[in-house]
Length: 361
Image (cartoon, rainbow, N blue to C red; front, side, top):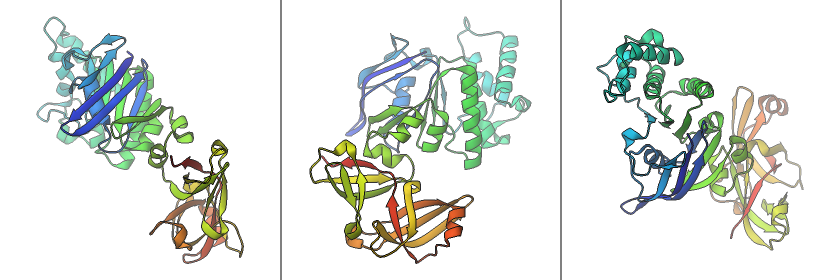
């Protein structure tokens, strides 16, 4: 089932939760709504589900206007962050609940319900826990049961609100892989809300980045990572360094006396304008300083070596060229860091290899 969202606006008092949001989701697609707390992603999910009503705008399922259709009639499955399982019911009873609550004319027989629940528990790989209660399960198991319960009513749309947010990092990673495999098997149109960029980029077919009630960018994980549409997107996706400078005829200078020149061909018509550059830590070259070297002179204040990566933190030497308390982050392979024998307190020179430049309007 495809979903068409058109010009949706939602306000709570003086707070604008959603501002003229439009979005198309293809049938069988897995889409992530990604953004910081308060950006409107959960409000949008609840409006799609029918749990909230938009002030203006429409929601259509496969071309049919469902804006004012009751939540019970939308054939939507919903999975919450905190499982929302019935504690007094067994795993089996939890999964069967939605089927048993159907109107008598649509309700399957107990034999059919038993078989369906058994099949769903097999699908989420927890059929051996049918007689247990939620309190006897781990967090990851509870969330998989919540998903099985949502799937029991054969929803045309599956909505997940921060489904792995309450779980520890290792379990979250396992469940992300599992959800992606499950979706590939079922092809249910699915939307999940997350503030975790890694989760969105790893699991989703497409990512919708939201900020202050608006959609900032829509694209595949690779598209939004490689070609961020705005400073917000660049800053939100992954660690990033922000440098201020001036752009002039396709170049930007940063770093003061021994300034680094960054190519900016997309701004070749810009004349001496304020600009800022975003640089990923792995796109910063680090080497020992020699007098006259072009680059940013910086003191290595901290080195964190974990596994194959050395994460380095620097303090610029020329403070007047940077904001107060600026920390520049760089990443090297642990092998190269050990080979160069860089020491904390040493003055090094940093050169951005690649940057995304925005000119202040």
